[in-house]
Length: 257
Length: 183
Image: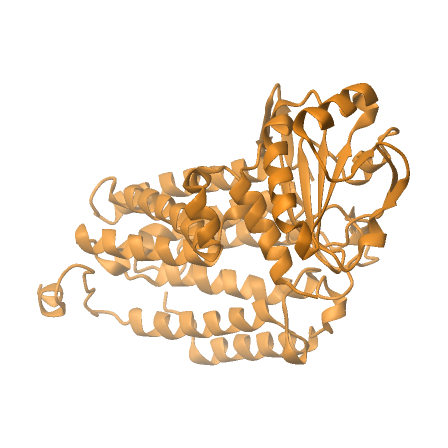
């Protein structure tokens, strides 16, 4: 684990850099895929950029809303660089909402847009795995297997390595696009389904799982639901000849030849 | 190539369901139980006993049941100087609700006379502890100054902030989070 790098007076947070690298590589790949799918040049990287900025702003505002009087008394604290004062769920909701609004405004077709985003999502998950390797987050459960790593005062499963390898595998599968039909949205769904399958498989080796009543690991249950939903959508979107609706157009207009 | 067949996907989902069932654990098997000591979020704060500036000793585990803010600092560190008035202000505001602030000076890379002058300059009223040998800094894997650990009533670290200066709003919101957790 190597969470920080000191460069003179600056303390670089390497996990953050790994995430940024994932976003940057993903954004570049998404733009290439968008060109291949004949989407507007630059539209996908702009969508990613606006969603990310909105996500960060939303996460900070969501956090501030929970401590409203404190932040009203000191509004400049909204600009603090501390990642500890973000509310991830609010950030995710805001980011997705802005992405949808941007897509509607630019009249981006839903399924080709999702397929263009598929390599970005796969690359981001690899970056996220690398970030966890650097920070030691998402750590494994204690174990005596020969490949255990000594982390946080115990021998543990190298869960961060498992998850990075799984993310690389998902990326490789996405690259090959084994389901074909580029632009139908199924490649995006494949990335989501495979990532959910990886979560279901590997969560069992985590030492920081959120446990639900009955001893079930929350991430595994959610992963199963996501897998089932992705498969259901994949079935419905993979039918040949099915029209591809646009986000910004009425259905009749979108289905017109 | 077509999407995976219904039979294959049903088998995969069933396998996932069985694996999910088999990998159930009691909450104590993960950090939902009593976590081991380590200087990171979700783990118990490593215990220490240090001399106090002005005499006496203080042990972190004696404060169990109270929310604790541990701030590692040095008198020569500019962000430490910048955030110390905010820490003092929050301490004054929440002391009556049980908040304990411990200012752990990294004395092994500072001087006790400079520490005393610093405390007087900023009018600090919370306990100042002297890490003369660097043992606490090592146990808390100090990588940058200041480093701040927000510890809940059960002795579990809830937030770590490396670097600074933290604004008063950041400190206050984190303290409010600890106080809300009750106990």
